[in-house]
Length: 111
Image (tube, rainbow, N blue to C red; front, side, top):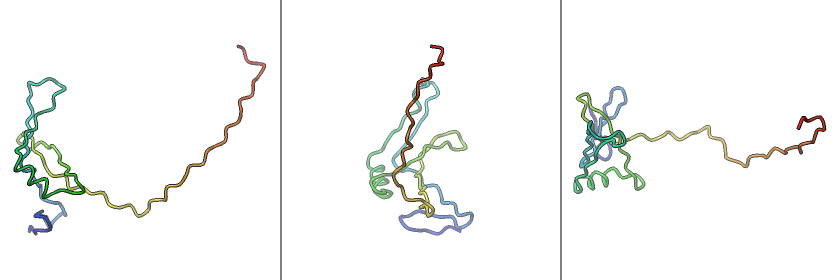
Protein backbone atom coordinates (compact mmCIF):
# COMPACT_ATOMS: atom_id res chain seq x y z
CA UNK A 1 0.00 0.00 0.00
CA UNK A 2 1.42 3.39 -1.00
CA UNK A 3 0.45 6.62 0.75
CA UNK A 4 1.26 10.15 -0.43
CA UNK A 5 2.90 12.44 2.09
CA UNK A 6 4.20 16.03 2.01
CA UNK A 7 5.94 17.42 -1.07
CA UNK A 8 4.78 14.63 -3.34
CA UNK A 9 7.04 12.01 -1.76
CA UNK A 10 5.51 8.55 -1.79
CA UNK A 11 6.12 6.22 1.11
CA UNK A 12 5.64 2.48 1.13
CA UNK A 13 3.87 1.59 4.36
CA UNK A 14 5.50 -1.81 4.71
CA UNK A 15 9.13 -2.01 5.80
CA UNK A 16 9.24 1.81 6.33
CA UNK A 17 11.21 2.35 3.11
CA UNK A 18 10.66 5.39 0.96
CA UNK A 19 10.12 5.01 -2.76
CA UNK A 20 12.98 6.19 -4.94
CA UNK A 21 12.71 9.79 -6.09
CA UNK A 22 14.58 10.12 -9.37
CA UNK A 23 16.27 13.46 -10.02
CA UNK A 24 14.34 15.10 -12.86
CA UNK A 25 16.53 16.91 -15.38
CA UNK A 26 19.78 15.14 -14.47
CA UNK A 27 21.52 12.44 -16.49
CA UNK A 28 24.76 10.68 -15.53
CA UNK A 29 26.63 8.52 -18.03
CA UNK A 30 29.84 6.63 -17.58
CA UNK A 31 32.15 6.08 -20.55
CA UNK A 32 34.11 2.86 -20.10
CA UNK A 33 36.67 4.07 -22.67
CA UNK A 34 37.44 7.27 -20.72
CA UNK A 35 40.67 7.61 -18.71
CA UNK A 36 40.61 6.44 -15.08
CA UNK A 37 40.38 9.98 -13.70
CA UNK A 38 37.09 10.60 -15.57
CA UNK A 39 34.21 9.13 -13.56
CA UNK A 40 31.43 10.07 -15.95
CA UNK A 41 29.46 12.87 -17.56
CA UNK A 42 26.60 14.74 -15.90
CA UNK A 43 24.07 16.39 -18.21
CA UNK A 44 21.51 18.83 -16.84
CA UNK A 45 18.26 19.80 -18.53
CA UNK A 46 17.88 23.29 -17.09
CA UNK A 47 14.08 23.69 -16.84
CA UNK A 48 13.46 20.21 -15.38
CA UNK A 49 16.41 20.43 -13.00
CA UNK A 50 15.40 23.85 -11.66
CA UNK A 51 11.88 22.62 -10.99
CA UNK A 52 13.24 19.55 -9.18
CA UNK A 53 15.68 21.62 -7.13
CA UNK A 54 13.01 24.12 -6.06
CA UNK A 55 10.66 21.28 -5.10
CA UNK A 56 13.17 19.45 -2.88
CA UNK A 57 15.26 22.39 -1.57
CA UNK A 58 16.26 22.05 2.09
CA UNK A 59 18.14 25.03 3.46
CA UNK A 60 19.56 25.83 0.03
CA UNK A 61 20.75 22.28 -0.67
CA UNK A 62 19.53 19.27 -2.64
CA UNK A 63 21.52 16.07 -2.11
CA UNK A 64 21.63 13.52 -4.92
CA UNK A 65 23.14 10.04 -5.02
CA UNK A 66 24.57 8.51 -8.19
CA UNK A 67 23.50 4.86 -8.23
CA UNK A 68 23.75 1.87 -10.55
CA UNK A 69 20.56 0.17 -11.71
CA UNK A 70 20.29 -3.60 -12.09
CA UNK A 71 20.66 -3.02 -15.83
CA UNK A 72 24.08 -1.45 -15.22
CA UNK A 73 22.95 2.07 -16.17
CA UNK A 74 23.53 4.94 -13.77
CA UNK A 75 20.86 7.25 -12.38
CA UNK A 76 20.56 10.07 -9.87
CA UNK A 77 18.26 9.73 -6.88
CA UNK A 78 17.23 12.27 -4.26
CA UNK A 79 19.10 11.57 -1.03
CA UNK A 80 16.42 11.87 1.66
CA UNK A 81 18.64 10.81 4.57
CA UNK A 82 18.35 13.01 7.63
CA UNK A 83 20.34 12.16 10.75
CA UNK A 84 18.31 11.73 13.89
CA UNK A 85 18.99 14.38 16.52
CA UNK A 86 21.19 13.04 19.29
CA UNK A 87 19.61 13.14 22.70
CA UNK A 88 22.66 11.86 24.56
CA UNK A 89 25.02 14.55 23.31
CA UNK A 90 27.24 16.08 25.97
CA UNK A 91 27.79 19.83 25.98
CA UNK A 92 31.03 20.88 24.36
CA UNK A 93 33.39 22.50 26.83
CA UNK A 94 36.98 23.63 26.91
CA UNK A 95 39.52 20.85 27.01
CA UNK A 96 41.87 20.90 29.96
CA UNK A 97 45.52 21.27 29.06
CA UNK A 98 47.91 18.87 30.71
CA UNK A 99 50.88 20.53 32.24
CA UNK A 100 54.13 19.21 30.87
CA UNK A 101 57.16 18.70 33.01
CA UNK A 102 60.43 20.22 31.88
CA UNK A 103 62.94 17.77 30.43
CA UNK A 104 65.78 17.16 32.79
CA UNK A 105 69.21 16.71 31.36
CA UNK A 106 70.93 13.49 32.23
CA UNK A 107 74.70 13.34 32.33
CA UNK A 108 74.67 9.61 31.53
CA UNK A 109 73.52 10.19 27.95
CA UNK A 110 75.89 8.67 25.34
CA UNK A 111 75.88 11.72 23.06
